[in-house]
Amino acid sequence: MSMYINHKGTFLLSFVAQYSSTLLNCSNPDSPSMLEALKPVFNLNAIRPVVNTTTVTNIGISITVFGILGVVNNTFINLKSIQTVSDSWVSLLQKWQNEFTKWDPEECGTSRMSVPRTNLWLPDIIINEFMDENTAPKVPYAYLLSDGTVSDSQPIKAITSCKLDIYLFPFDIQNCTLSFNSYTLKSNALQLYLTETPERMTEYSKSRMATMGEWELIGIAAKKYTLTSTASGSYDEIRFYISLRRQAMLYVVNLLLPSCFLITVDLFSFILPPNDADRSSFKMTLILGYTVFLLMMNDLLPATGNAIPLINVFLSMCLAMMVASLLETIVITNFLCGSSNYSRAPRWIRVLFLKILGRLVLTEESKTLEQKGPLGEDKTLQELRSLGRVLQAVRLQVEQHLSKSLSTEEWIQIGLIIDRLLFILYIIFITVSFITIIIIWVVSYNAA
Image (cartoon, rainbow, N blue to C red):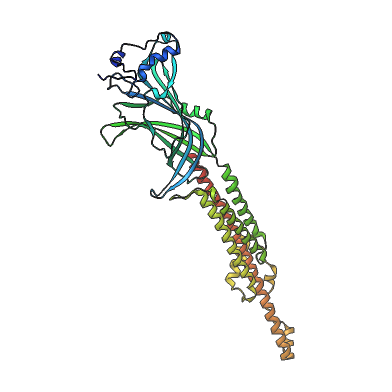
């Protein structure tokens, strides 16, 4: 049996050996007497508080999330992955049995007493995901109960790392893990268990939540593991899975709605006449404004890794559609402006565009196109031709002019039909794309 020497030089002989049949003795039922009775126990704070060293110390653990201060994205180049650093305010409650601190509540006048933590043996429980120093204020006291239970509650400013899944951003749900285990003691000396159910911890955390920022606490799950150590033996570990939902309203108002408004304006710009330069200038100004908008809002977007968020696809698609709309306007404008230089359209083009596609896109066919044609050779012209070569030249010039006007009108009509057709395809593509992205967002969000 080991002997312990206190600062007065006296020996604490046989205290541990006799403890199994002896409770602490208090001279009076008051706090000073209780503290005096505990002094021999305080000298044993360097050893695990069990009479028999083969006895396992069971540590009960529960947590309460008081606040979610923020989630910061960090890129670890060496890991080639995207991680999130969660900054949260957590209260850790630990309970265990100290076999040296049992007393009779009636004899000592109390069933509960607070004592300095430095006077007690404390388990070396750590959080494996810690990435920075715990800057929370230290609570200097722990509670002792008359049955030997030690209740130790400490605040923790938990700056921890967890895997970041940004595919559904800003409608994403992040899961961060807090793993608790002893740094030195194996399962044959220390074991962990949950003192509260996950449902109870979730309910209590939500009721005590002080700040959430852009994050909302969904729930807390917990599970115990027995892991094999690299050395001999195994150790206990309890993992708390904290689910957080991002408050998406900020991103909807600042990113999604403006993009939808701008793409709608670009859509209605098809109402402008395509052969007018104002339409091209308007679309170019719109693209420039949207590009500046994306640069200003870039800080709101998450850093991307291997997975591309749906919102990036959405924003890129909006910009691509605006660019495609501008290119279509440039092509149609050039086509209409150069129509006077084209010869008359072949018959199959007139049938396809003026007859079939014109009706399909609800464009009225110009009646003048049906009525106009090469100037017929009537009797008057035949008589005029006989009058002289001069009048014949005049007639040929008139025929060429009428034929050229007819050709120009046909190509203009074809260009307007193509513009209307591309406008309808533009609407269909935007509608299908938006609905598809929304469905993916909703289905993935509900599944998470």
